[in-house]
Length: 274
Image (cartoon, rainbow, N blue to C red):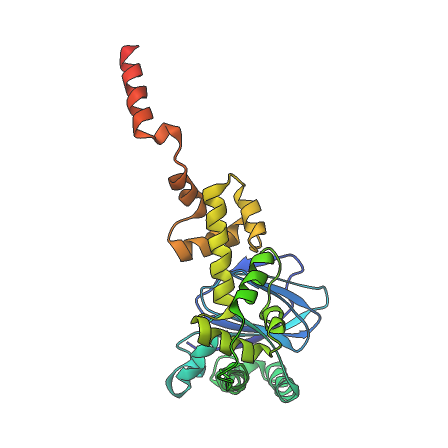
């Protein structure tokens, strides 16, 4: 399978889906909003997001938005063979901004796509994608860390708990530690074994699980209180984490009296006496 690079504006209405290929979305003009399984962010011009395969994401754009979208199957030449190491970019969703050098390359890539649309069925898009992916990996990959300076995880954890219902971004957490997003993400993973996004998603799902156990709140309310866009986003993430839908989890945790063995036996006895 080959990679595809395309232009399009995002609908102003919020849409959502998941797909079996990786994706990079870069905003060329206007703004867009993304939520990728609980990680939300505003994407301005010359910024973008990484959407790993099979991650449900919600998205919308303002009326003047225009996006450059790279669809990248894992077996595409840009992510296989000698470029296999670039797959690590898609370990988790991320938001990023393009520096000056990458903005110049983006302008070149954009002009190539516009001026050579007839080449969309050959390796041209994969060749263009490799350069962008390699540059992004070098900027977003692990940075050298100061061994003796560790993150205050307790402070970060408290902040996450107090803002579960908000649009939490890695930039928000990095500011707490007075670090760049790249340095913060590298140190966070080194200390916890998780990316910031994975940690936030785990905390959101844990909070949702507790609310399912301890309350009768509607699933829509639980989703909003724990930072998910809606009930569908919560259900999708909950099933991936726990292997069961939230509604079924609640039913097992709080079985209806009609399903209680003693109640069923009494009901049977009473019916035989009629």
